[in-house]
Length: 406
Image (tube, rainbow, N blue to C red; front, side):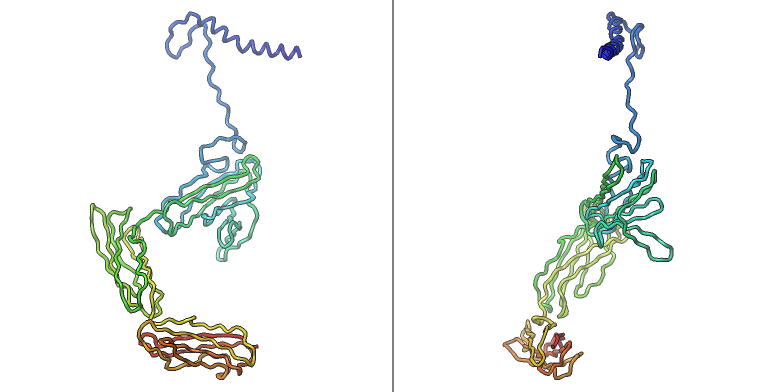
């Protein structure tokens, strides 16, 4: 115990001795040139900086966004104008002198795909069809890719590779953020996260964003007007437009303060009786190698005829020796006194006497009844009924039906 205390006292004395000597000699300071040391004084010791730990050791302080494996863990994949796929690469190197296993890779739902290349091998982590399923892909010239599901990736000592990430930027406006988590067997860095993002910008602004024509009769037409500008390109032109049935359009260019604005004028309708209503107009420009924009037009079309419940009749199970009946109601949306000029069965799987059709009227409505008769044989029953009409716009309607007789 006395030996330890003596050693501690001697060490303290050795530490403070230069300070005592310095105090004694600097009691009467003298002027000296900058950067020199006055005679009899002790020069201050230079600052000692600890040597940084080697790669792979705990406590490594790398620049923000990097770690012992990846020089960078944050990447901006750029700006995209509503189309395309953002792609970026994160190079890496195993800093250890022993192999390390990447045991689990998990991508955020925004990450379309991640590809790992190391040691001549390729692995893919995709969000479709099964999220976060890791596959090893072997490419053979002239043959389909060989795909094998794996649980982990072995990274040899000192091996270098890359993680390539993909983001789907179609129809994206604003920033899109994603990340990839990597869990490893490296005791110094058991978890790593790669962050990446891309920005979706508007190359064109369409006003209104969607044209609403609301409810309209199939035989009428309605006009609409849309203006289009580009916050990116000051001077630009519309080159052409894809033709869309039911639409007629024209466009006119205007210049103000050195910026181009286009006014699109269109007419929708009349359309055929079976039109679902509306459509999307696609215009091509001279901006960035033929970039395009779309004008969406929404309309609810009231056709000349409503058919309820529709063009298909499911009978399900019909007991042999009994009958099954179902009805279809035809209602005109105009003043037509609707009549069936003929009823014709086609594509029957049973004899002609197994089914029968008849009509009746209920005001403006035409009601068609389709009956499976008691003569229908056992087994699958199916066919089609063509109802020929006296309507000026719709000449016939086809009704499909099926059932099982047992």
